[in-house]
Length: 424
Image (cartoon, rainbow, N blue to C red; front, side, top):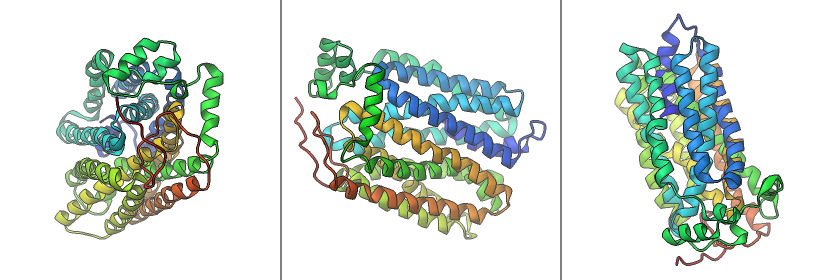
């Protein structure tokens, strides 16, 4: 919701002449948000193996809620951008932690589906943001909409503190062996072992990053980064600029904002379809095909289409676009062993955030140039880049040797890799 609120109120921000927003300024501020997410993902993805999942989830939610409040109160464009940067820090930190928790607690052969289920909440939040923008923006202004971003600190944090389990591997690394075994038994996980426990201290954090380039991963890691870059350029470029691109193509303001809700509805369907399909055929194959279908959808939107046809194409493009990126995340846990999983996911999401920084800025430059057709072409090219990068991951993995792990992850690469241990 917090990510998509910006795109949902973008037309109202630009139309607020007293505040001083332009299309170019709006794109720059959108990039500040995603730069904050880059910093948050890189930092939290590494720190969570050391401090624990639960404290980092709690802190991340508090930080992005605080950032939303700063935006609601902002007296200037600079202050508003600072609020979006703070929001980005919390949002960027939350993503790799959530992915690591799902990868650890999901049933072995349902990891991709579980990841997709978790990410449906992203699009439910996107639809909620669009609804708030449509309901509150015209009559009450864009500031009121940002106050909704404070709600998670009041509602989600108490629930996380009470019910979110800590990682058995992190508990084991801290010497809390009995607690680790109790959590593992409660959630039917294998008992943690030293191989699954992240090494403590600064030396351990450095070792976790260095392990991303161990044999069997030294080429797969940059390819995952590149695929994540392309996917997040699409996700945040489209989420930020779809309403303006559609308005520049001749659709009304209300219809243009509604397109954002429609594409997020497609995203929810896509997560469920992609997750089940990936558990059967492999996350890499699904991600590559979905990226290519996204490129086709973007090319189709270049044409001047009847409103109903445009809604249909935006919906099916949403099915492919968002889940293509999420299946990159679903493929990552099989590349990294448990002790480096949160770090690996943190760097895949963090380095990928450079795409999220580029996407809103690039969209702003295109819209400022008055060429909506070029914007759709740009997104199509990014989708093709993502397809090529993720398709190469299995090839480079076969050419390297992968160290064994105590608990192999489900096969999401589309080929047999390691032995999956039975649940207790």
